[in-house]
Length: 257
Image 1 (cartoon, rainbow, N blue to C red):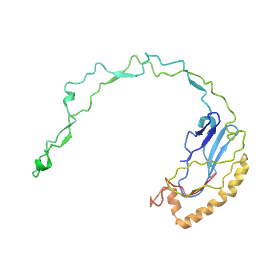
Image 2 (image 1 turned 45 degrees about the vertical axis):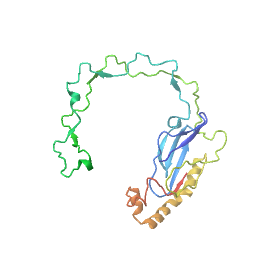
Image 3 (image 1 turned 90 degrees about the horizontal axis):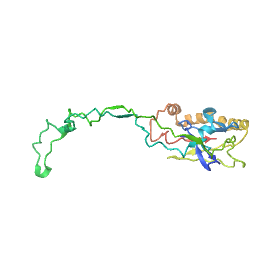
Image 4 (image 1 turned 120 degrees about the vertical axis):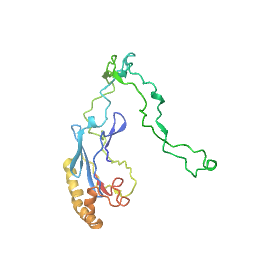
């Protein structure tokens, strides 16, 4: 999976995006771009195509919630949460518990070569009882005292502070590093051509000069080395040798930002 994590200065912690980012399962290089916009929205593109976009405030819990449950209010002790109750007029039939779930197999016979001294006492195997109806429980009926689902009243959160600069993840200081949090079971995942900029045109030009300038030749080389139809098999999810070609656990090739 691919995730996006942003730093919340308000909470002093790293915040994970609410939804995973779609990714491509193959062995070729791909270009990932995270675009943080001045209107506090974002977009994530893979190879130039948008795969996720939305609001920073809604998709990242960067701020404290606007409201919180009122600490001065509690659910009344007499509040009834159960929408249904057991029918007091529905009684268990006599003899219900006398019917066992399993009974001795009437067709089973002790083997002729069974030796009680060596094999122990022979026991008749059990089979499901066709007369067994399961564990009895009374029917449920609407609860006349049901008051509905209790909703805790909300009040404004004193810790909430609006922020129209969520996109400025570097704060007052310029960004100097790009971090990757990786989990993989095989080697050969590479990252290169990494760029951090506030100029979208510059980023687009950089992508054209690096990733897009190399990707077609990379595919041709891959097909030549691996076989002409190998790439198409990978893209279509056909894995002839799972040990050799495990796409779920390894994506070889460069992942570019």
